[in-house]
Length: 302
Figure 1 (cartoon, helix red, strand yellow):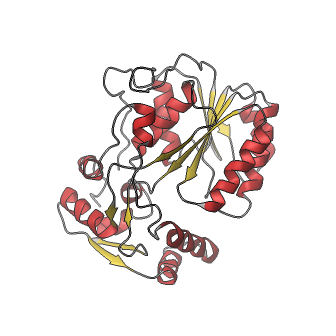
Figure 2 (tube, one colour):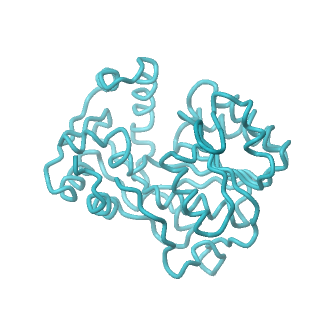
């Protein structure tokens, strides 16, 4: 998927508080650190903050602002002088060691005088909740907002499932479970609202798209948008792990992802929520609209 320049929706007031519950930019004017600033969510948050005139530090392992989740020696330098931070932990908040990392980050943020932290978490992940609480417990007076996301729609256009869509076979251990896929533009808009506006401290927002689709239905939508058939191929968790290993993933990481998929795609996350509307005052983007936009931008030209 080609990277789109950010343009504000409506008349540019997405982040002001109004009668529909939207939140305002005026309360936060300092510098914001975006961890994983070159990732799928991080770069969208960076674009939006910059468009609003907010000073941004885009943290990454090799960027101008060094930030590595595996090396906490650089965290203080990245956080010093910032007012807020967007936390997108890699590889996932459910992995072993994530809670310890969140506690360490919370202590560092508090020591650096950070006012506000917005944490990206996974919807329906019990171990991720442990990491969320570790951050809250260590961050002291820092305002913490948690954004729990459904499965990213962009995983089909710029993530692990991209090659499958291009090749016409979408392989997943999802069975017939439905998932309310979330567009990352909606997620980024919510994150920016929480970073820049008041009224979000302590909140937990569960974000989903407006309807739930099985992976088979998603494959049909993707095929229509791409202009060629895309077939869903359900597989077992172990078979999916083996497939990931064939594509170069380590055995441990492949096994973790397969197990995580099995946990998340057992039906307990199938219901939609009103999280996007609560924060932004508008409905989330439909999966069909995502697919049409991704096709228009050349996501599946390969």
